[in-house]
Image (cartoon, rainbow over all chains, first blue to last red; front, side, top):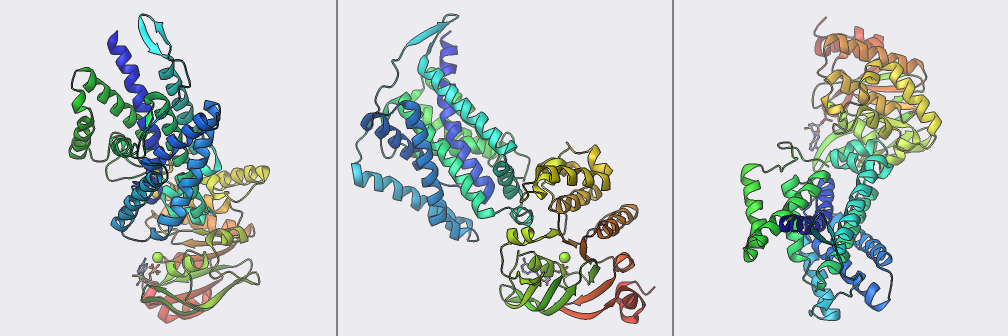
Length: 291
Length: 235
Ligand SMILES: Nc1ncnc2c1ncn2[C@@H]1O[C@H](COP(=O)(O)OP(=O)(O)O)[C@@H](O)[C@H]1O
Ligand SMILES: [Mg+2]
């Protein structure tokens, strides 16, 4: 029974990774850039949620929506200011810029509020309930429901709406998309907006679940979400979801087995293994990169 | 309808088009023939806004379109069927057609035009839920043409639609080009298959290393010794 609880914990953690990984994978799919600042947008989301709940006494769901909206705007600004002019530059130039943006965000936050961690306000009484002898916290359920809702919403946007179809078209062939009358710049902005909103949501959820946030909190989850995206097949949306869940479950199992010090290493072992065995990822077709 | 005036187009420092002028009148099929690397695709990409001319102008229905964004050129009524078809392989046939109508909001009109595309290409109706990447080359060409028609263009420009297709399929595609033209769409057709192109076109231009070297009615060019020697296999 304890295993099932661990599994639930793993899925909760994994769904946070998945939400972040989606932004990585969508942005990579459309402009072939590993947006290393993405983990920091996650951090900003956590802080926006923190201020909204603790200082402005907003309802959690409103705080979540506010964090998503502001992160969407921040994501678009990052793209327009830093990445847009690098579309035709070498990949390494774009990558270095992304790392620069990441550091800029981290140290701007530290400049304004210091590096000390903040404690997330308790928004739910941590109550557990039992199903068939398995204790499950209400928080886990909440995290899962919100994550699943957002992922279903994303699938709907990508497959059923005009902007979603434009995103898929641009990521497959930007010139052909232009010939359909699709505005490629706006479509890329929309991709950053959606990916960043999901990272912002992940930030708030992370804060509620782990209760401790700080300006560098985005680094490790960012890297792990990136690993999750690679694991699922970078550029592939369902891949990011599955990759995130797998990674979360593996990490939790490693901890549960008593190797909690090795938890972070597990992610990197997975990365190395996937790069050796199947570099295109679980869902990747060989040498094809698509959303 | 379309007037290209003395344009120069460059890739970096390399000049691909050197003072090209050409004209397409409403209702015509005009073909542009020339060997590989002559600059045919470059010209079409410049017309549809993917490339910008360094010099010269392009006029469409009386207003300048050179330097405009591709989407506003689509909006103005020019659809480009690109070389190599460039279908969205990870989307179904129907989704490809829907994307062709991206700038339109008239639901009923879109529905009607989709039905019409399926009439022109019954094969696509059978495969409408299939991913277009799994189709044969000829079927993908149909998707590319159908997708362009979904924008309801006044002028359709096509880049080597017969490339790599079996003879029967080539015939089919050319039939449809004629049909589309008869329904009122003006056509600018780039081809290496000069024989077929000249047989459906009203007028033609010959492009060699970035310059127009010959032009006239299709009939004139079919009978010209130079064209026969260079492009019609000396027939
Ligand atoms: N993206 C590009 N970058 C540099 N040179 C190009 C590019 N595309 C085409 N060219 C060059 O421009 C010339 C014309 O090419 P293109 O218009 O594709 O010819 P065609 O369609 O008639 O075969 C060729 O010399 C080709 O090598
Ligand atoms: Mg060509």
